[in-house]
Length: 339
Image (cartoon, rainbow, N blue to C red; front, side, top):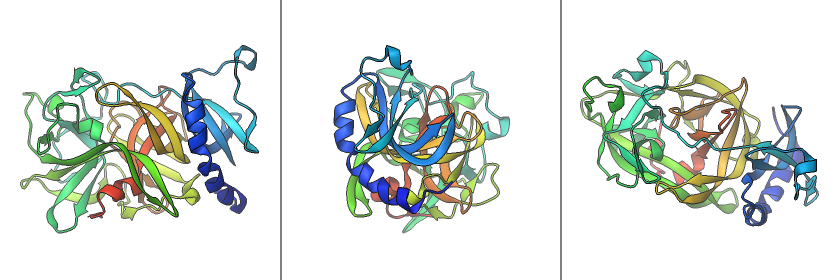
């Protein structure tokens, strides 16, 4: 699905009005997301843009005291059910394909990964696994890096240079860490950078870990996918509607369509406080659930040319919608990463 030239021209105009809508509508506790997105009609995506508002539970109009107007600034609106899944890591009861849980050499994307020890999220110690998104190179460094979500490896007690485990420590018989990498840098916050002619803030939930000397890696390779990720996608309105893929440890290989590059969500910080994450990339699954707990950190990439769109950060409770940190936000903090 591609946007028409008219919709492409309209996108940035609509996006410029978003800060005002975010300020107004996030005062309402029932609103969980706000963004410019493809409009859904009869449970199908359309090539029409709308101001899209997420709510935890859609109600009949007769029971809504302050309904969203049918149009804002002369543009159509849409209301969808959108509740962020609270737990993003796989636990001991999560069903994961055996080969994704094993110690893997060479290291590739789409396999199990964890911190070496429990991490503190929301004031609670948690033990769980996420997904190694993809292996990347770093300029002037002869050792490759893992790319994944910050919340897979980081909590309020995390220190840089701490060990990263693959296979995940929680999947080993002796609770043993193979010390396959060390955490070098992470962001779990809104970051500012230039997107086209505008300076924007975007939520970046991403971490990189430097591979240990005794492990090998295949750059750009993702488990179960024949093509190799070859670069970072340009994030602008022209990417909306494109088909993308991810390979995660829980729901394995799934496809979906990009519906938005401007959505703001209510999210939780590591200490449990709420934060509004801005300009996230949104994906709608093509056959139901796109992701689930444990898939966090998966690389999201285009199916036609295998370019990295972003890193999966989480999904809705229903799983049909997912969100990720965009490629340009990643490059704004790590411009020396490459494939």
